[in-house]
Image (cartoon, rainbow, N blue to C red; front, top):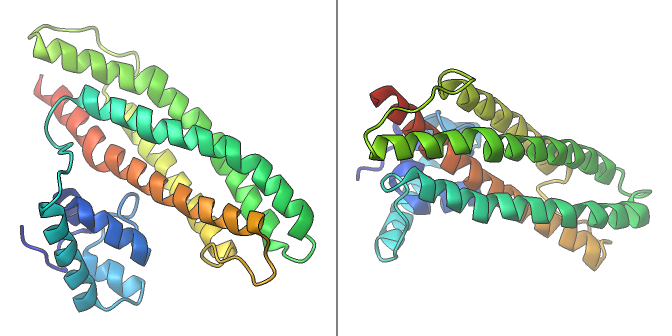
Length: 240
């Protein structure tokens, strides 16, 4: 595996799972904004390209000594189960947890820190959108991919989907992922990178810590879908 600044962020994230941790730490978007080259992403974020390349190279060496799940191969059903049982489950649980926490922190600190309401408004919009988004995946797109993969494994035909090509719902999901990415950026900017002010209480600090973790998980969630599941599903349908 060759690591260069000319490769896209998406390519590096796909080749090396450890790279996603580096990108997360440095604030480089590898899911929705993964089509840019690493060099372009570094220049946009005012990062030293050589230092980033060294960090990605080091992460690849660490990953080489660890057992990582290879989602580029194996059944799509397994990848979907992982997304649902890990990321969809986590997202729903954290949305339920964050709502009351936001209410508590805003009621106590909102008068001095008006940015809290801006972050909360963005979160509420994101939470509503994600709820509908995951429901469409769980009830429409994922079952279709299950059926398509099962039919291919058994070398039989299957009924065409009412939405036509799988590319149609995939394009919709990717568009909604872009919208989620915009909401995350707005929240991060309004909260100064989820940095709690000096007068913040434990609940305030917890809120921002959980939001940062929520963002990191959603980035990984979108990466698995945009960069692995969706391209594999489209390729499978095209090959039948």
